[in-house]
Length: 242
Image (cartoon, rainbow, N blue to C red; front, side, top):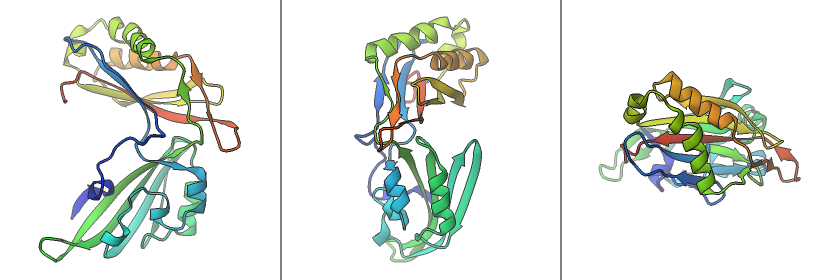
């Protein structure tokens, strides 16, 4: 059985216009890093879409309904208050349990959908079983925004992370690290945590401290204009993998 992202069937995963995608690239000298700030997933879904959803295609962009011949199972996974929750169905029609699960998540939260299904192989004409792996993120009506420009954020991370590293050997060897964080209703960064470690406690700690002390955020707002939390990911890499 193959495991493939569903979007690769129709479209390579790209950032939507609604999401922020700031890229802060430093000159690629040894030990220099480039930083990338983005919302948590490329595909965004609004709360009203989730509330009206009856089938997977109602909230997963480019969902290939016509391509699928049959389903074995569908599992939806979300994280609520640090707890991972799942709900299953037999096909793409959402159960009440799955609908309730989708209503529980907060802005910036990821929705993971694994659909075990079959389709006809276009070359052999034979049925083939695949596991379609989908990610979407619940986005507020107006997303949180960093008020500084590219140069300001670039200088901030360089000053508070890269330039502070004592163990330059680790910094030169580093390929990639990333962290998740929340921008709360007051525009304050909270709940910062490492998603992919650099392998160095010193660098991870500097990275987290820089994120936690970031100022100048405008909070997200829902459709009623109420300020809400939103989650982001910031990554740093040396460009070695590009």
